[in-house]
Length: 513
Figure 1 (cartoon, rainbow, N blue to C red):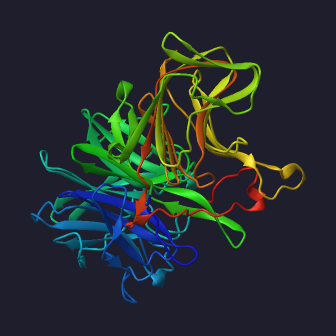
Figure 2: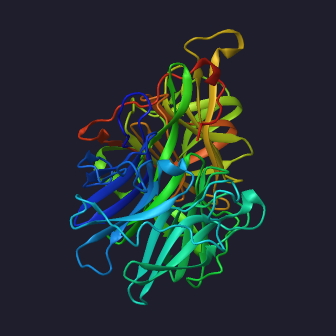
Figure 3: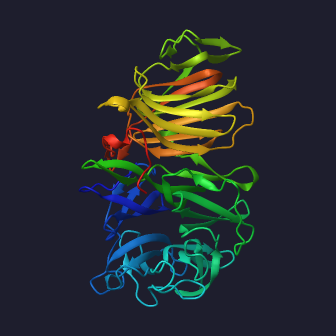
């Protein structure tokens, strides 16, 4: 986990990550001021150390003297060993209503120098909006992404732009300019215009398995979407399930590292300051983008978690399991080398030995009956903790914080807060492979090897772990729980970033994204 420490509201914004000679370089915005681009480094992609800030807003009167927005860092294709950073800038003279794209250069990724003409680039006009009298009365031209394909000589600059015509809130597109000579860009029609969204933010383009994949973040649902094409010029299509991560994960950027394509993004968690909730943005661990069935993109848990395992315990007997409520209709038995947990009427949870803080749980499960099942994570003896509900048949997962309200009043004696939910496509009839990572405030759930849930929450930081059944029978095998080393951030133990929930949040609610 990584966050931007600071007085009151100090958050990370959009991110970009480069892997170079064994080091991850993280560049990110700092909110709410947007007045500089910060730089942090890491050797494992989890623990970060802040270094010299990369870029600051311009001096008064310069084109970027108001705010700096999303950036993208890539090798300079014309200067060996050099780097280019495309970034978004706004000027005070225009009240920040016109977005432009500038360029900075570096020889070492640490010291950056802004470039002059022909930068900044600006929206060229038709087919794009280019004046404040159009559309939403501000000019979208931000979130640059440079795509280079050396074998074909292709150099594309993608950006979040809007076409001039059509319903105002359906004009968002991925704009396109080709670099035809060093620092010369010729604009063309959009690479992709879905004709559906207000903007397509933070676009990315990459090739995988012979196809081109275009990724972007959509404000309407606060999710990361993707499209695919057989040719780089499109047309780009989408699957029925073209969402990479559930709500709260946003502004994704790809990073190529050691033969892998990693997805970094920020997560908006709820924090309370002066009794008022607001969205606190943090950087969770990345995920690896892989190809799933039919060319669909899927995400795998970050492989570096394997290096954090300090202990491992396997469970192959029922004697160590502890029932939570003592329901007489419940039982645990060993049958055919599998542990079966059953409860005919009502609810029962079976807890594994020990108290767990940082852990990774793995198990292979089968389900009998038409009832409910799931997991309890970091739960107390009273059953307060995270409840991970799993509808394995229909492919639906939801995690919620559920427990006694520390300040109960009448019907608000409890807190029942759905935190995140998602659909998934796993094995049709099981067995299903379940994996849960709890690392500091980060929680991650994978089904059959692919990440389904990814979120940040600090409601419960330690407790028991187990499985629950409700009018169902759950079979378990290869059940193991691993202890992970403590998370660190900027060379110190991870802090808890979200605060005590406000009274009006006891029944849940969304985030201010």
